[in-house]
Image 1 (spheres, helix red, strand yellow):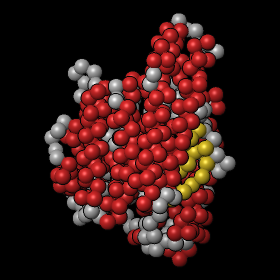
Image 2: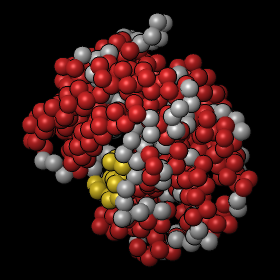
Image 3: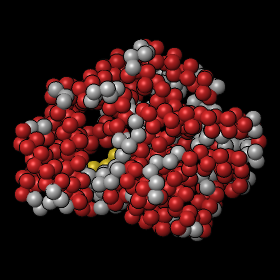
Image 4: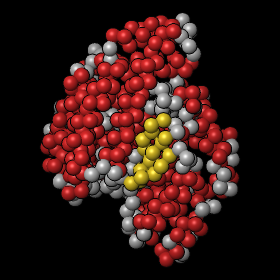
Length: 501
C-alpha cells in the first residue's frame, strides 16, 4: 500500500463509520422511529453530517488526494486504490464547494421534510409538505450552482450525481425515442386492454400471508438473510451499510396482490447488487453500486424481465395459489401471466406496467427540468403534475396522495434520481440480450435455478463496485455502451405478442 494511502486510511475509516451511523438513522426513521422523534433526531443527523464533512473536507485530505492522483497517473496504486481515490476525489469536489453550515442544515432539513412528506401523503394534503419542499429546492439549487462548471446547468449537475454517463442531451434523445416508439404502441395496446382480466388481483389478500410469501420470493431469488433483513415502510427502499448488512423494506396493500410481490422482487434486485460487491471493496467509497442507472437495471431486470416471465413462475405458481386458494384456485398460470403483464394507464409509478412505466419517468424528468430552470412555482406543482398525467397517460389524479406526493425521493432532495429508473430498464434489456446468448435462461427459470443468472451478474457487474462506470461495464459485457434500442425492441416484442398486434 502507498504511504500516502496509509496516511489517508484513518480519514476514510472515520468517514465510513459516520456515514454508516447516518444510514442507520435513515433506516430507523423510515421503519421504526416514532413520528415525533424527527425534530429531535434531525439535530443528531446534523451533527453527524457536520463531523462527516469535517473528516473529509480539510487541508490534509486535499493534499493526500493530490498526491494519490499523481501516483495513480504513474500507475503506482492498485486498481482498488485507484477506484477509492476516484470516488474520494468526486466526493471531495461535491462537498468542498458547500458551506459547512448549509450542509449541516440541509441534512437536518431532509430528516424533518421526509416526516412531513409522510404525514402529507397520509393526510392527502400537499400544503403540509410544501413549505419543506420549497426549502429543499432552494438548497439543491444553491448546491448545484456552487458545483456547476462554466455553461453547465444546475439540473445537469444533479443528474450526474446519479448517472455520470448520461446528461440532459443524452436523456432528451432517450426520452424522445420512447415517445416516438412506445407511445404509439401504448395507444394500440390500450384499445385491447379489456381483453385481459385481472380482477383477481384486487380481491382481499391477507397482509400477514403477503409478508410470508414476499419473504419466500426474496429468498428464492437469492436474498441472503444472514446478510440482510426485510422491514416495512411507507415507500419500499434498499439501504446498505456494507455488503454484509443490506436492508430492504416493502409496503403491503390488502386489495392489491401484485404490489408487494413486485416491490420485493425489485428491492431484492438492488440488494443482490450490494451483497455481491467484492469483499475487498466493502466499507470503502468504492464498495457500492457504480451508479443509480446501473443499480436500477438490476432491480428492473429481476422485477420485470425475470419476475414477469412465465418461466419464472412455472415452478412456484402453485405455492402462490396454495397461499390464497380462495382467490386464485380458478386462475391458471397463463391467466396470471397475462394479468401481471397487462398494460393500462395508472396513476402510481411503482405499480405501473412495463409499457407505461417510462411515461411516469418522463413526467418527473420534465417537471424537475422546469423546477431547476425556474419555470414553475412550488405551489403550482400539483397542478402541473396533474396536467402532465393527463397529457401523457390520459388520466388525472383525484388527490395529492396519488399525485405529486406518491414518491418519497423529493423529500430527501433526490432530484435527478428518477431518470435512473428508465435508464435502468434500458440497461436491463441490453444485459438480457447478452445473457440469453450465453445461457438457456428460460430452461434455468423453469427448473427454479436462478444461480447461473445471479453468478453472471455478480461476475460481470456486481463485484466491481464503483471501479468501473456504467458504460465501461456495458462495453465489457455487451461490446457496446448504453444503447436504448434493446429496450424499445424488448417492449415491442413483448407487448405485440401479448396483445396479438
